[in-house]
Image (tube, rainbow, N blue to C red):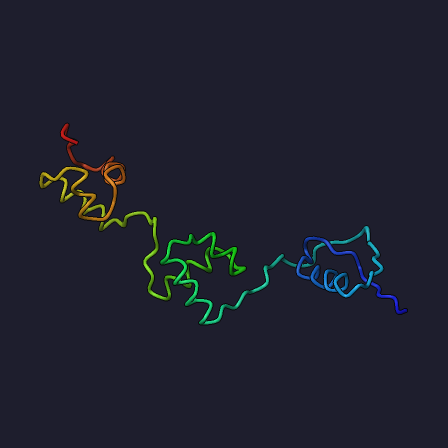
Length: 146
């Protein structure tokens, strides 16, 4: 029986834990040695996850059917910002985004024209509370009919 000699790993070498796990799955028990003078020699980096076009297409379909960015990140094994970037690159409008300054300017204009917060929200696809929060601090007079 051959002995496998491995060095103990820290979280700095987390991508190497896979080697230990694979040995365990093959039924081998690796011999582990630790070093008390271990030091981190470089930055900790996450392994890059390359998504295929088929995976991106599946991601788009799942997002459009209601899955969240966090759920997709867990499912596809990547970071939420990677999911968001790939969805945006595919031309998907992200849900729950803060209104842009142009959208807030439209809110001010519509509200100033006499529409209620609810009516402004309906026109822009937002709820009345979002419109109210965006109009706070803007030079516009609040009305009592809202």
